[in-house]
Image (cartoon, rainbow, N blue to C red):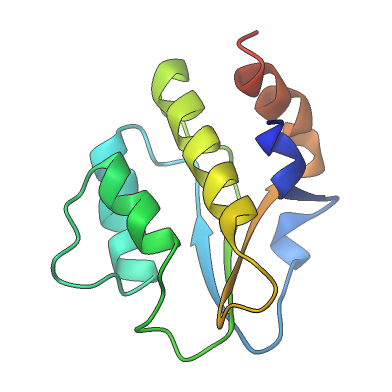
Length: 128
């Protein structure tokens, strides 16, 4: 499955907005999975039982029962500086979570990256 197709690429992520959505903005200061988990925990108001690991993040990105808005958007203002193996895990997990939502469900998830990062995303997703 090509999960990179699950992502939205825009010319200027700083200008990206989504009406009536919970928007979490992720910057390039993220260098470790723990930093990413902590940031998303805060920005998405993840539940207290969140386990601060990839499986727990995937589970929460497939639930959102605590979010009142239908749409949840993770905007990557800068490309996270995670080590490549960790970034690949993040992209695959995020893509799977986005694609796993079905139209009839109460929530949906969108992941937004800058168009300039498309080649990096695709290279990581294909192992390049």
